[in-house]
Length: 211
Image 1 (cartoon, helix red, strand yellow):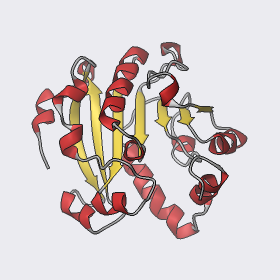
Image 2: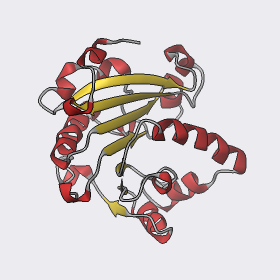
Image 3: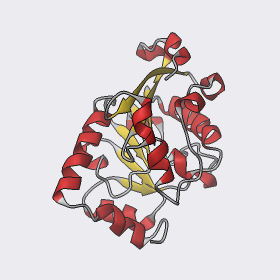
């Protein structure tokens, strides 16, 4: 399987009915935390993007996956964060975007927290009010050779990540089953962390919570 190529796209598309049903449960959990037109950062083959509200846009580094999404009528754009320091310069505030979701992306990156901080700054510029980060648990992380950095709640709750971005850490949830320990043995367990803009009713005290 070639990373960021045709093989990886086919891998994402190769889901039977049972896997599609299970995947839908995970997508439902994410969607409940989002509002309005959303940026799906690392949209893959568009499983989440096609269910997001009108005006949503997907960003994806794999050109084959972008072509697949566009063939399905989805608004997907080719994007490599390294080319613009993760500042989302191809988007502007006139799109009326309100949320951004980064699902199972950060673990594929080197120095993911520095890149997340840049994405939070970019989200603030765009007027985005919610940023949802989803990462795998320990067993899920170890199950994929393309993963580079294990991201946990201790990393995501570091105050330096949100400092000066206009965002605060608002909530965390482990799914399925809101218990971190499940991620040690269940490969499809994930952590969902929501950042919200100060003017979106977030509670700064939430950033002090630990698993």
